[in-house]
Length: 238
Image 1 (cartoon, one colour):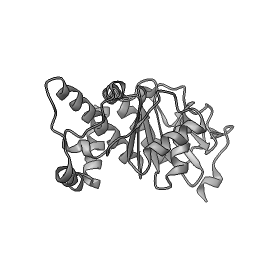
Image 2: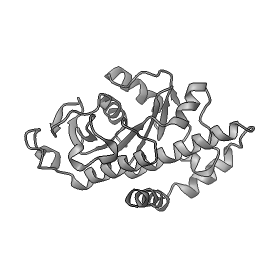
Image 3: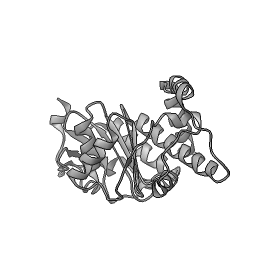
C-alpha cells in the first residue's frame, strides 16, 4: 500500500501524494484570500486508512507551499514533515474515525457564520447554494477541538451531515474530496453573510421543503463544484 512507503520526518524532501498536497495548498490559499481562513485554520485529506495530510500549524496561510503540508497518523504523530500539525488535529482525526465516507475536512473561523452562533441564530438557507451545507448544527461550546473527547463530541454533532458550526468559534465542512469540502465552506459562509444582512432589514425567505429539495437536486453536481473551485482559483492566480 502507498501509505506504507511514507517517509519519516528526517526525509522531508521525499514528498508523496504530490497532487493531494498541492490541492491542500490551493484550498487553504483560496480560503485565505476569501477571508474565511486567516492565520489560523487548517484543512486535511485522508490518504489510506490511517494517514492524514494536513497543513502544519505554524505557517503563513497566504504563502503556503507543499512543504508546509505534513503527514500524521490518527494519533497525531508526525510521519512526514519537519513541523508539527495544528493543535486541533484532533478535529480531523475525530471526524475521520467517525465517518469512513469522509476524505477531506476544512476547519476555519469565518466571521459571518460565527456571528450566527454568537447570537443563537440557527443557520438557515436563504439562497439556493446555501442549501448545500445542510442544516449546520452547532456544537454548544466555544472550546478548541484539541482533545479526543472534544473531537468525538464534534463528530457526534456533525453526524452524517456535510457541515457543522461551533459556538463563537468556527465551522467545519467535510467531503468526499477537498474540492467538495472547500466549496461547502464557501457557500456556508456566503449564506451566513446573506442571512445576517437580511436579518438587518426583515425576515429573510428560507428555502424549505420542495424548494430546498429542488435546489439540492439541481446544484449538488460535479460541474457546479468544479466551477466554483475554478472561480476561486482564478482569483488566486490573478
